[in-house]
Amino acid sequence: MGRFSQYFSRDRDDDATDGLLPPGSRPVLVHALDGFLGAGSAPRLAAEHLKDDDAPVVASFDVDDFYDYRARRPPMVFDRDRYTSYDAPRLDVRLQHDAAGTPYLLLTGPEPDYRWEQFVGEVHDVVDSFDVSLSVGLGAVPMGVPHTRPLMITSHASRPELVDRKNLWSGQLVVPGSAQALLELRLGEWEHDAVGYVVHVPQYLAQIDYPTAAISLLEALSHRTGLQLDLEPLRLKQADTLADIEKQIALQDGGEVLAGLEAQYDVFTRGAEDSLLADDEEIPSADELGQQFERFLARMDRPDDRD
Image 1: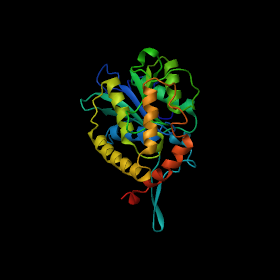
Image 2 (image 1 turned 90 degrees about the horizontal axis):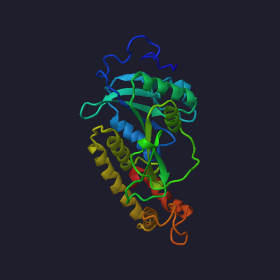
Image 3 (image 1 turned 90 degrees about the vertical axis):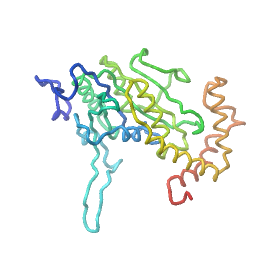
Image 4 (image 1 turned 45 degrees about the vertical axis):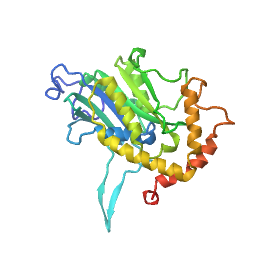
């Protein structure tokens, strides 16, 4: 049993969710963690957009069990001669409602650095206690794609029947693990339905906040679950970010490298190649792309230099 049991426990005799949900309700659990699958800050932006600070916390995990404080030092405020505040990391599940009043659960916070199996087991307790109908994970990875084309999303699930969209490639890959991926795997083994969406963020935008990727994830979530989500605030941020990106690219190389990425994307999506890389003689190499965008990224991190 996890240490979040101050809220409820599967071992309790009473109904721990009594009064929190309508009778017979089976909510969706959405998990968007800040960590390995966090390119473009897409899951964090999605979670911040969804999270209602007034929504009740129904489960709170003991972060000390999972968090590497030296690798991800939480911010503190030092005011003249003393420390005045500490922004402690939190892993919480909130009971939220969409625009139509439909309840759902939202798990947000830092991806655990340690004890993944313990964390997964505690989330399993939440799933059982609230009779969750479906777990939905949101993630993002960097990819050699241009921001001027529709973002690709890889869909996956604990059962093939749950995959609701066709991925653009097939085959078997060995990929680095994540707590969210392990959660989906274990929930499937425990016969709980689980799905996930990973949006592919342009590699040159992976280190900045990229609202377009968060919008893509939330649209996939809404399509899969029927949750009604107001994305207009994110769309406004998206417009400002895209305008800034276009300005910086024009200052760097006039769009030459971007045109190469667009050519890669178009070849791939037409099915002419089996990878995102076209002919090396026609498309810039990864090193060339990195050199071209190095100054671009530096400027994107310094707002005062953008004018």
